[in-house]
Length: 196
Image (tube, rainbow, N blue to C red; front, side, top):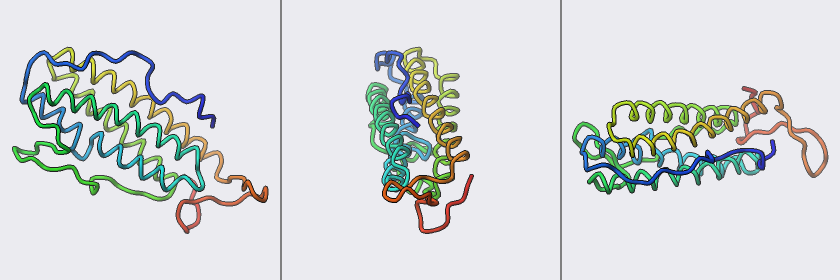
């Protein structure tokens, strides 16, 4: 996998980060994109973790997670700016049934086998795209819709990258050891590597 050939963020320009007017319902939806279980903060924290634990055996995968986490940080920033304009405090929290709940790292699953780890990330991206597409459908503010669609375009890039990684893992369960030139099974944990 050549990192230089991967697209981590859609090349299209970003729309202005602005809203038509304050709206509590829209604010709560966008706030959930910051600090709910399916949120940018969850993605960032998971991808940072994934980058740490894949670095020794899967350095290119680790670099992918690092670069994708940086794109997710831009999304978090955009949603934070929208929340301020919509009239809510952009803490790492979300409104759940009228009660503010702070984001927690316990929202994430933390698989350590490489196939399951990448599949977990892929599924998270797909769920996020569905969430944002649903928001585009009911939020009646063309500026917010444009921002959501721009973020969806980035998330689709991430889906493509995770699918590419999974395809390579399915075709190659062995890596070459740089020191001795021998093939060895690679796993993040001490357990045996399990193909997907």
